[in-house]
Image 1 (cartoon, rainbow, N blue to C red):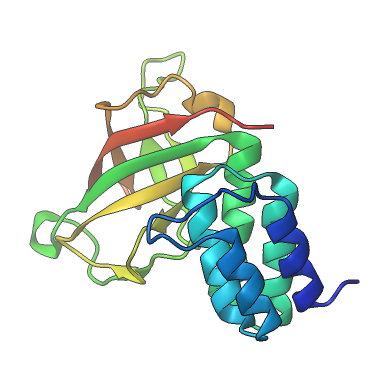
Image 2 (image 1 turned 180 degrees about the vertical axis):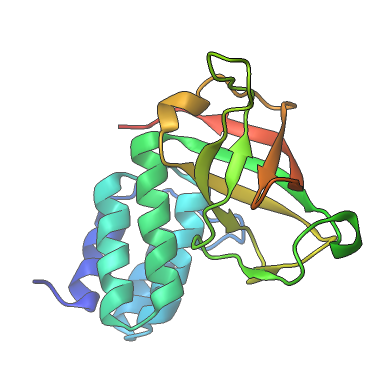
Length: 194
């Protein structure tokens, strides 16, 4: 098994030399960080570059293993998540949770892909009843999401093929029990990239 240093270098080699993150950092900056043994910085910059330049499953696997070796569990889970998106597609939405006094959840939840709520995405049973689908939920740019709050989220359906009909502007509902727990508007749907 390669060490984190080697994995980061290999991941950088998978990107084009002209790849640039939104903040202006480049693959050359990553190579400098690796030489200076600034491994966590290199990992963060590689992730940021891949936000603007699509990366392969192999790229994300290398970053996930490097993060695991550096004991950066949240970063490892994020890299695993992004590799999953390459294989199965990306679904992003703006989610608003109901407040507790509206029947929503009582407390915030961790936004790092652990919560597996049910979603009404428009499917019905043969009898015409609501047929809910499960998807993991990752909150973008926030460690937690609480009652009454709104955030952009990424969804990882357990059965991605059942979600392919969704388009930006579609509204879906999140359920943790019988009543609706949140309302989400789809903002992006990308197909698998493998």
